[in-house]
Length: 466
Image (cartoon, rainbow, N blue to C red):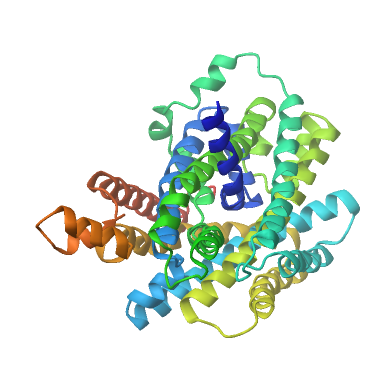
């Protein structure tokens, strides 16, 4: 009992980064695809949601390992170990991915503000810049204390809790007579491969779930706790975490991440599809619904309260995802380019880059233009994900980057207990096992091939839902 309490107490100190990462998997960009899936195929595509999140868990665990073992996030490792031209190319793709992702956050928040408070879309887009202030006030990863980091994590967690609560309330607004049919939806179905539209939507769910910027984010958020450990136990923070800090943090970081993704991201994405499947299945006007149309559909087919709850969910998820996306922009710019600008300037620039094109579209094209740019942003993300995830697999599979020197006292003890003295005794290897490397490469290949298939089908004129 005492041992269990100690484990839980220690685990509580690691709660935060996984919640922040889960935000990237449940932004407003996911909603239209999931609603379309539920409206056309009821609960069948819940298996696609589950598989997408399993893929996300594997990739994010690699991010946790990379950041914990090397003490550097994915962007910093790219700058340090890859050729300059390749590094700059990856930076360009990463920045485009962040802009494309942020568009969904900006649009979702702006539409919710219009629904709830009657604020015009253009003004709503401008108001989303306010989430940068939260980052400027709370998040200081360079601080020697975890206090401000934990406050920031709690702030975002409250927004996440608001999103989760909204979808819990949505689930109470619907009726699911056949619970067995719902649970069966989490099992792979032949319909996905027999029906081309089901395949398109499944791939759209995959593309909208596994976001490129989350890889940079996940590999960076682990650093404050490692630095805090070394500062307390060794009095200073070195170029990379000590072996003690890695062993202290790694397994708890894995556990916190996996639980956050399954209990938050998987729940929210599943809830969206379940609500659509229960209330909108068979309704032809739900197949191609955008964010504003989804609100009207929920009002029409469930209750006005269901529509308002959905709008609040967009507020909470849009703001939390916008904050996280802006933070990812800072991580990418500092990591790839080693920018010397103040953090607030980097965050503000990243946010404005996303808001300017979105504001241009709302002013010139209106709601129809917003729907088009959202669709285009998901196409961009689908193409970029395999590009930015390849270096992650390469780094974590290599002993060259994932070997950690043993403390001097451990090496001396090892030398005294054995006659053989070689390099293997001086380091601890944290590189991926063969099976994990194979699994990671397979996931990367599946995502790459299926996303390319989806985009090619879209370009050829297929009715693809991103």
